[in-house]
Length: 319
Image 1 (cartoon, rainbow, N blue to C red):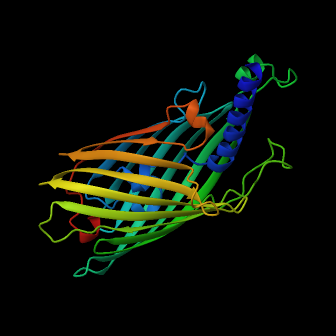
Image 2 (image 1 turned 90 degrees about the vertical axis):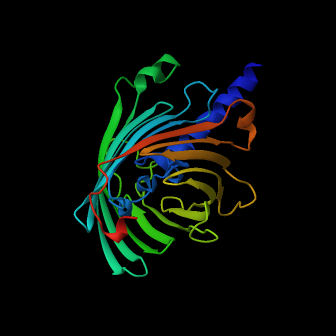
């Protein structure tokens, strides 16, 4: 029994290490961006709407396992004039014995290429600040190295850039995050990667039978490459919306896999959501299809939001 518990803890610890190396200096990106919240992915989405858009996200990974990762975030963006937008993204992440808090300040500029064809080009840039630390207080309580007596922390400054093209109901964005190398002065440079640049492409389109149709289908794909170790992964998404005048309801599924293991998904995440007046709500559960499934109730993501001060811009590119 003790051996089984030790093996389980070892597996979980390894997953924490792998997970932290992938998400360090970033908020964990699961299915939050599919909850009418694409600004969490890229600065180019800042100011797309003609209002102030606010989204709160709560992410609880591996529910049922003690001290599993927890993340809270706030995303807000707004229109500035007819051609620009600004946004802020704040997050707090707890992952094993590591803690990180961060902020991202974004600016985007939107150009109209053809107002009759609804063709637009957007450019975005973000300044990122992140504080990452190892919390040794709990580490000591489970028999850690007694010579380690203080928290180890580092603060990092970085930048993201992106460009997005939209035409009618088609969109594609190309982005690069964490352009600068990581400062390793507080850590062991032999084992810590300092190249944390991620590159990703997000694309999709919204299809309906005709203008009066109340049903809309939106397939999309998110492709990500991690420079530090050459890994790449893909999200395949499908969303179905049902419109009720200006309100709508939706459901869909998010399928994520490593690109060298297409038939072995990292997880499958069904999701549901709604827009009622200016209020938004979405829920997703991530089903991990490996041995941890026997010990966990899955990863849960909740998003709530509101749109304020509608009518900040009458430019077609806000839609």
